[in-house]
Image 1: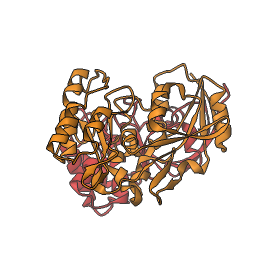
Image 2 (image 1 turned 180 degrees about the horizontal axis):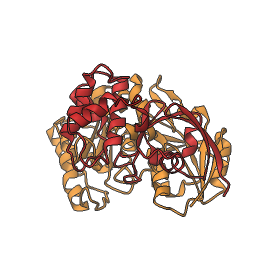
Image 3 (image 1 turned 60 degrees about the vertical axis):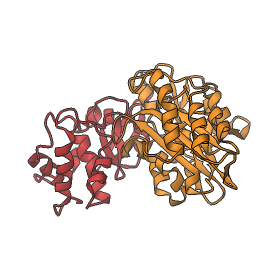
Image 4 (image 1 turned 60 degrees about the horizontal axis):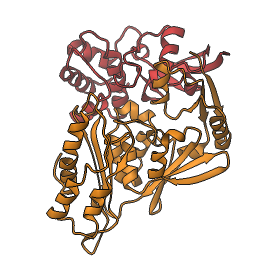
Length: 159
Length: 273
């Protein structure tokens, strides 16, 4: 089966590669580009561990046909820190014990970033809604919700 | 297994590619087809896409609203003129699923999914299909009954009635997991009233059969009567008639049958779930 060319913007950098037909974006990111920050959880859209931003909106990369991101901007957790400085959301998660095993964390952070980019001062209900597609099986949701709210209070949360 | 991805601009070409190949599946938002591919569904050898902008159009000006099949739930939620459909759109997935999942794709979602379709069915939904011979419109109810045989047809748009008043349309999805979970039962009711009596009631149920279905016995129980306690009791008693729910991890078929009337009573009388 012929491979097809694909070009898109990955964390601010233009990338061009060849993909097999039917490949999902998560495989492209992890196996072809070596960006292992989005995780494979369920492959069904039930867990949110693979959440990335496409043109600024949260999408599930495991359910995104790679061809559909042609010419678009894909942002993963790997791209949200600035140099050695963590993103305020990352810092808030670390300080608020919002990550335990860490598997859901990249998806949680990207879902939270999608919220804060549009709504820098969300209510608690809006945070709950924003991460409602992301499953956590060990930390518990309270510290995660509190961390997102804490990050929202910090000046760079919407950067 | 790699598949062949075919992308067309024209809907007619996409429809031809779909109808001429039994192994072809149309990819809308990806939440159904990519899931099947991820699970290794070898019956899919070709994925067909269409980029025609008509798929993303919304015409909400008239008494009937028309929504392109490629419109996502996030876009429905951003459209003020579609406010009556917001509860149904909001009840689906988390934000990422709503950014991806489409109105057209929802017609194909197997139980316990397909909640938006339940709302459309109660609102006299119609489906616009692009086949080899052009466009044709089909009542949603008829489309759902033959859904398994519609694989070769391309859904271009759906349309539905705009409720006469905000109170005339009610929607509720019963889920165990808060705030978001799969449906135990999904209910939608359109209850136009004339002279204090219900005329042309349409009640639709989700997760009570392989596809969304109408609760016709319950509709008949309300017809021509004021929406009072006795009419609501009669409708609730008839809610389970004609249903064929399945057992799954969210609820057993027995449980769904038992609670269908309870939730219909609460919906019709405006009580909290």
